[in-house]
Length: 383
Image (cartoon, rainbow, N blue to C red; front, side, top):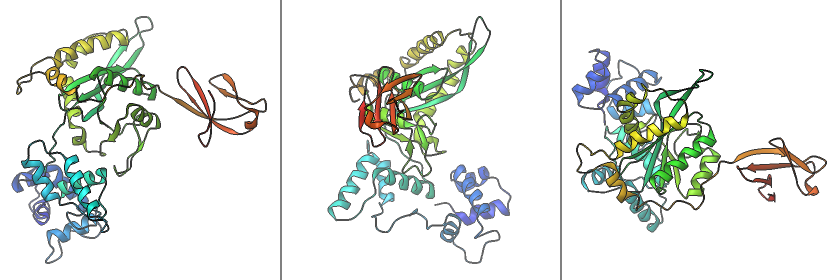
């Protein structure tokens, strides 16, 4: 736990910066700055501090709860995160999934309520921050794929109109092998987002158990507390089709997708410099060049490992789930009213339904090769 009184004294009396305080107290700079910002915004406590105020008292006033227990519901068994942290640090190949499973089984056997995995992880992250610990991540073959957009963009040049179009680069990575996929996009709307995710799975040769994504609108509608995010309906359907699970990163917490953040950095500090000096006149031309560079990167030997990314990927893809027989297709949805001639209009075409549905609202779902019409309750009317 941070020495909150020392942090406040050093900030208000010694006029030290967050970095200076973190250096002198041997703690995390972001933790110091986050606390000072919260302290300044708190209306329950200010400097100078009340007499005999403890670090625990400061924390409870600033954050509205006691240290180490977050917003703990007393009806649930709160995990021993000190023990869990030590297990993660000292035991080789230990994972949070295993420790949660053991905790949850014990709760069930004793007839007590245990947290679900997502809440378990959220509480663990809070405990790490409150106790100034660094999260330990052990990557398991085939467990996850992380996806994000690169910050660097490129330009597509039309040779006839001289119009310039922005190219955004989608990046995906398998954290265990660090095998990277990337693809340029001239549109980041849902159909293209689904397409590049499909292409990433094809490139990796299988489906991971979890897909960790940023909170972009193509993937997540809302993610206020990380515990119960609202996923984009198409991306949720894509995950269900591929029998994987979407795990959005915690808001403003890049370490939850650190592998893809590092991958983006490798691309932007590496061959992206060569690519920005080139002119591209088609998206196909850009992606072919990108994939050539990427192939060289995936087959380049690690500096601190014996082999390259492709070597470890050869092992990891055996642990991935098989690809579905048919790729997921983006679905466009619309609610329409059945007209008096028992037809509904969709995409400038008219489709007939049973006359029993005249003047009723229906739901339309359309892919590239089929149109399906449902009642609002989900009953299929026509294809």
